[in-house]
Image 1 (cartoon, rainbow, N blue to C red):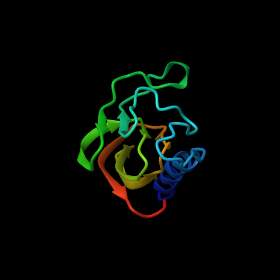
Image 2 (image 1 turned 45 degrees about the vertical axis):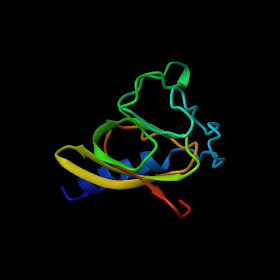
Image 3 (image 1 turned 180 degrees about the vertical axis):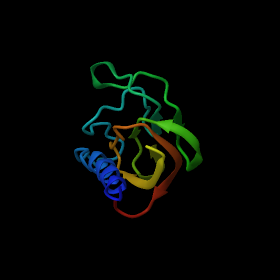
Image 4 (image 1 turned 90 degrees about the vertical axis):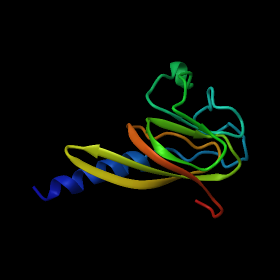
Length: 127
């Protein structure tokens, strides 16, 4: 059915857009979600939800201070830098793969669903 791909894309877009806005203060760590074990000055990605009391404690699948490309599972992320990060991702469901990018401002985090993260780069312009 032709509407099915649009419905799935709508769900993904809705989930990504539903994240509350986060603080843009440089390295504040005071966004809507706490940084947990992500250290100041780093960008972190976690592969699954393991956040007792809403704070990430699991080992991140990615911790970077530089631009990065590869292929990791990312359930959520946290930007604990003073730069905007662009995250390239893909998501496969029901045999269809969707790709996109998110812009993470300082203190921003979360995908809400498991994604494949393929690139993190720094943006010089506002998200």
